[in-house]
Every structure is written in C-alpha cells, then in structure tokens.
Image (cartoon, rainbow, N blue to C red; front, top):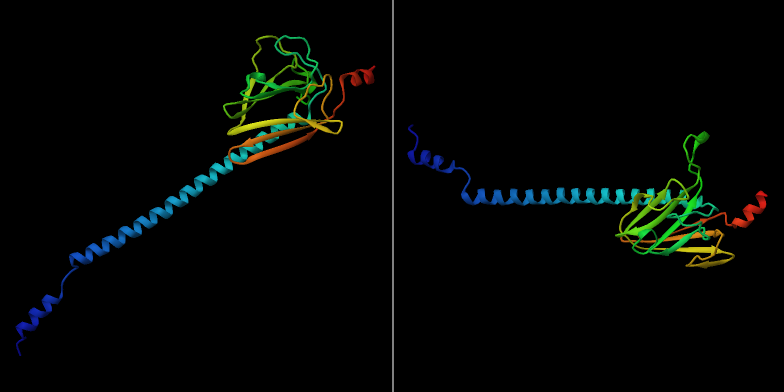
Length: 220
C-alpha cells in the first residue's frame, strides 16, 4: 500500500524548531540567572573587601596599642631639654599645639631603648611625643632626651581617623586633665582616643611615680 500523502506531509509539519517567543523566553530566563549570579558574586566580593578592610584596621589599631604600651609603661623619671632650652621642670608636657599638633601634644622621656654593651653612641633613654595631625595619631621621637634647636624628630604615623584624643593624669588619689606638677611623674596616665569607626577607647597605664628629688636622695 502506498503511504498517504497527507499523513506524510502532516509528519513533516510537526517536526519544527523553537519559535521566536520560546527563544525570547529562554534568553530572558538566562539573562535573569546571569544577573542573579553577578549580584551574588558582587556581594561576596564586597563582603571580602569589607572583611579585609576591617582586618587591616584592627591590625593597625593593635600595632598602635603595642607601641603606646611600650612607651607609656616605661616613662622615665628624668628631666629633658627640648629645642635647646634649659631642662624642663615638667617631666611630662601636655600642652596645646605642642609638637605642632592640631590639638594638644604630649612629650616625655622613656626607658628601655636597648643598647647592648653600649655599642651605639647613645643611652637607653629617648624622648617621645604624640600629636594629632589631620586626624592621624603620630609618634614623634628623638634618639636623645636632650636635643638642640633644629634637630628634626623621627615621625611615625600610628593610627588614622582619630577624631579626638585626651590625656588624664593620676596622682595621690585624684585624676586631672592637666599636668603642671614639676619634677614629679604621675602615678598613672589614661589615654583616650575617639575613633571614627570604633568610637571611644581608653587605656590606663600604671607608672612608677616618684619625684626627681627622691631619686637624687636615694642615690646619694
């Protein structure tokens, strides 16, 4: 029997490809999936970037605290000369615009700068200062506690985004925001920092205290 022509032509007509509407729908679905995948990838990248920034910021803060701990815990009971002037009666200076600070600056001497077997032409006492410049906490220091006029310090930025800072001094059971006592070290010192991201942070350091006269009497 010969095949029915109408049946053959009918089979041919049913074997067709995708219609334009089906192609457009498929493209729309693919585009939506691509956008969703990109958004997920972008969010992951942003999250990783934020995490890296926070980790770097925390490392910066921890490093600054380590350096400050070493300085303040070893504050020296020693007068010092600055800019060729006579020895200061204040062992710790906390003044407006000291060290060219935008606010207040802090200046003192500290022990513990290791000089094994006196190999270098210096002692183990150095002069250290702290200041704020354009919201950056900077450590300013000299290799010698007594410096002539014009001797430039070594400046090391420690911490960014410092909106404000404060120093309080403890002596004989009382805290004070000023330090004008002469020839005496405070018994404790509190350093307060207001950071743009972490808010207010305060560190309290116990010091040796004492006065220069007591040191001279005990040595004689």
